[in-house]
Length: 179
Image (tube, rainbow, N blue to C red; front, top):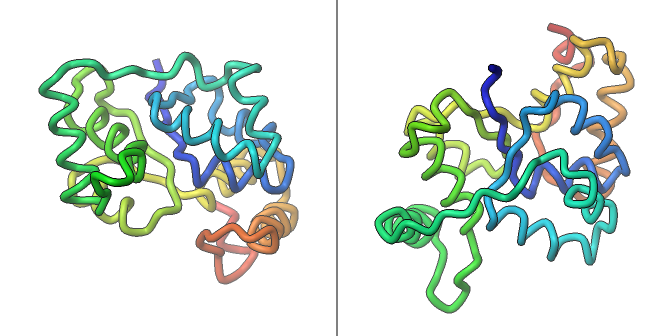
């Protein structure tokens, strides 16, 4: 079985901002998963990017993974506050990142899974922890490799995301999207 892929809200919003969640769904190849905090964040973000509401309806990220073990919850809270800078007054801030990092680092059931995010600080932390990470640009390059998009179309897609107000890494040239 292929490793699970956990896109975070930033990645989901990138594709929703340009009405191309279908491309993301295809890129994940049935391996997409999410935590309950990310699912909740997506629900809140759907007020601004209505296409996000289709994710739960279509079910391509599966059921949201709930974490109810008290020790796990304490470790997640430590990550959320002490690593990602969340606060007690904003209990949902960075919860998705913390839950995902916890699962991928600590839960043997998710060994080999990887995380997709465009949050630079969160990615840097995850990489230091040995968590396999990718960014939106990597998924789009994969779509080029799979011949779902040409390199030029991929660059246009990424630029459209930026034009829609999304913050993500852009390749320096179209050639970087061809593997």
